[in-house]
Structure formats: structure tokens, C-alpha cells
Image (cartoon, rainbow, N blue to C red; front, side, top):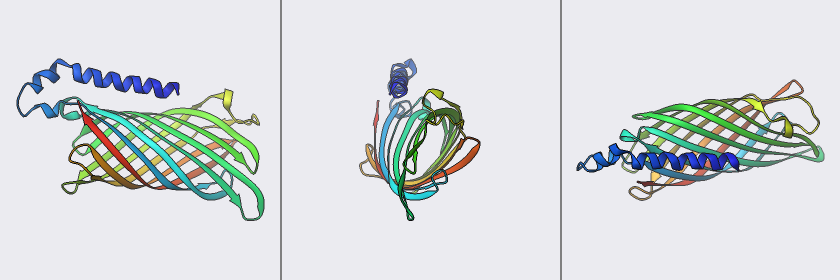
Length: 246
């Protein structure tokens, strides 16, 4: 919660700077040129059916992922952006030859600062992840990690009310908090994570509400006692977004 509160404060600060900028009022005073300077805040909410393939617990299963994305674009032609993206998933795994079960809870949060050139946007990402794992009814892992990476996105207008997008986020988790690491005290190491998100946006109203559908794949690695596991989550998701101009 503290990191979310800090990010929200930073987002509000960005909006404040954009709205109170002297250049903002100069441009708004010029007929027909104000919209390029007005900051845009947006909120996207989504949920998706998730298939989780885990090498760590040696099982596959399905579940639901929920998430939100909160951000703002400001500056000349709204070229400077900032977003917080958070997704959480809980998957219970069963085994055909055993009554024992496994459970993995994941939470990923990315905070990015972006610069936009036309259809392309790029920027650095600060990433956090929390993974709690129960393996065949035994507590196996509980850690919180952080790291840095990058984000790239493409957004194309394909019709009056339709857009297509492709977003790629890559981060390397290099710092783990030992105070909440693996309950067995086995050495735990972070690894790389890659998200690929492809989808479409359908405008429901002229400028405020939209619907989003897409497909997303996330791969990430964790290492316990020197053994590395590659985890894969794939999502078919639907969401709704809204934005406002200031």
C-alpha cells in the first residue's frame, strides 16, 4: 500500500504541474490550439481467464486475473506520460495422482515514465512483484522483489472508433526483501520478466468510455536453492476504460 500511495501522489503532482503550467494557459487562450496542451488522465479496469503453467509446482491450471492501469499524458501534444499498472492472480493447482494441492499468488506492479512519438511510446519501468507459493500443501516461497526495465508500445487507429495496440514490458528483478523470503530459508533469486500484450480498443462514447479486449502472455523466472523455474501466465481478457481532460 505505501508504494501505491506514493505513486498516486506523484500522478496527482504531474497533473497539477500540467494544469498550472503558464504555457498551458497561453495555448488555451489561442483558439483551436488548446487540445494539444491539455493533460489526459485515464483509468483502465480489466479481468481475464488465465492459464498458468508452473514449473515450480509442476502443474498447469486456470484461474482469473484482475488488474487496473492508472495514468496521465501531458505536455505538448500529450507526449509525456506516466502510468501505474497492477495485476493480481491466485491459482490453485491439482494433481491427477495425488490429493495434495499447490497454490501460487502473484502480484505485479509496474510504474513507468513514457515519451510518445506518434504511434510509438517508450520509457523506463520500475517493477515490483510479490510471489507466495504453497507446493503440495507445504509452504514453499514468499518473497517481494523489485527491479528495473523498459516499456514499449504501439497504438494504431484502424477505424473511426477502433484502435489496435501492442505493448511489451521487460524487467529484471534484482532486489529481494529477505525479511519475507522463502519460509524454509533457502536462497531465493529473482530473474527476468517479459509481458506481451496485444489487443483492441472500441470507443463506446466519443471521448470518455471504451471497451478493451486482448491477449497477454507473461513469462518470468524465479530461482530457489540454485534451481531456476520459468513460469508462464497467458490471459484472454476484457476490460473497460475511461479518460478525462483537464
